[in-house]
Image (cartoon, rainbow, N blue to C red; front, side, top):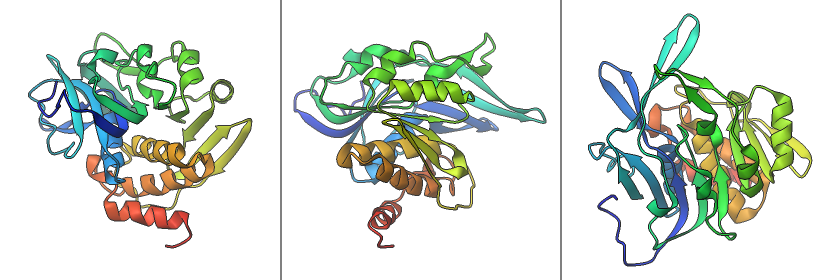
Amino acid sequence: MDERIEMNLPVDLDYLVIGHVTRDLVGAGEFRIGGTVSYAARTARALGYRVGVVTSASPELDLDQVLDGILIARSPASATTTFENIYTAQGRTQVLHSTAGSLRVEMIPANWHTRIVHLGPVAQECPRELLALGPDVFVGVTPQGWMRCWDERGRVTLCPWPDPETVLDRADAVVLSETDVADQSLLDQYAGQTRLLVVTRGPAGCSVYTGGLVRDFPAPPAQEVDPTGAGDIFAAAFFLWMERHRDPWGAARFANCVASHSVTRVGVSGTPTPEEAARCRRAMHGDR
């Protein structure tokens, strides 16, 4: 576990994210720290919430700067989950070079208590047992990592989401990208199996499915520099607004606003600044 964990005193969190931090290779031997947990945790922190992360990574990976102000329960692993994106004329190939350890319920410090749990797998690391965290906890899910498979060379492809019913039945909100599920009939099936499903559509915004209704919400225009992590930033903002206000339409508008700022910067620097967060909150009340 990370040395910043105090095991005796009770810790009240607003937002707990569970998943692997990643090393995202960017060429010339360099990498950026990424993963759903990095983007989502930084977003929740920027929005003013007390945040914790449960992850697994090599002890050599320095998380102090990227996850500054965030409590970390890190299980040491022989390697950090590492991705590389290779671009050719035929498109993008994603390669998974290494993975850290599977995450388990007992890795969550017993003295941590939270209002929201965000399950954010990137490489099949979150078992379904993590859903059993109590009926009063708001469970948000970004299932992308359950839809990734890879071959012996690490080449990543989309694969069917195994046993989605277990997750969809427990989740209070599920956010996924239209690139994760190309089959509209499958999206409709998922929407019928869960309380609230959001499909992000990049610059086009998002679609919200709940109670048999579907509504589309356009995103504010933005000068895109790097879309990496925008979906995770959207999800964190959406879950936080939804848990507090129980308003899916408002949550979609707020999350669209927060995520639109994220694409204007590279990597985790795209997580919102306090000023951007305040601007989006004011916009929700018609005061720009």
